[in-house]
Image (tube, rainbow over the protein chains, first blue to last red):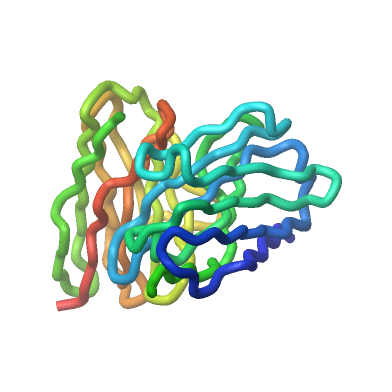
Amino acid sequence: EVQLLESGGGLVQPGGSLRLSCAASGFTFRSYAMSWVRQAPGKGLEWVSTVINSGSNTYYADSVKGRLTISRDNSKNTLYLQMNSLRGEDTALYYCAKLRGGYGGPAGHWGQGTLVTVSS
Amino acid sequence: DIQMTQSPSSLSASVGDRVTITCQASQDISNYLNWYQQKPGKAPKLLIYDASNLEAGVPSRFSGSGSGTDFTFTIGSLQPEDIATYYCQQYDNFPYTFGQGTKLEIK
């Protein structure tokens, strides 16, 4: 059974940093692209970033480019999101999602999310 | 970036009704279009991929159609458990983008 468990969320001041993790199990992690998708309170879904299976290619939404960095450790079956220069508009529930293919595709499995709150 | 315009933003229907949601892409995305269901307090769930393919285990009352720029999601006979928000998403190009969502309520 595919399981995705996010962690690392919390309260951080504007301009601060946070690192999210997503521990994956139940599938061959190194074979699949992974994404982060976020949802601000009461709002819709926003795709944030994707990393392909090898980790060599990454993609970002314009709203986070240059501030958030996606990465993965295939030896630890873990996905990361390094979040720097955080702003109030980054406040959201952050979901980790497994994509169908090695380079992208539909998000067939999701974690339960970790909440990031950016506030002074 | 590809913009996804979803309508309506909210919808009220009765049990047994046929429900239709539309999604329009700002450019041709072939059939690289997914539909997700999100129930309150839960993570999204993939229902339809590649515009018209039903994800394993999803009831057959859900269906999707379209290609190019115009897509349709249909619930053939609305059930009480279908109360949720539904999102389209394109994956033809990065950045992947979602529609703004359709909140479905029971009348």
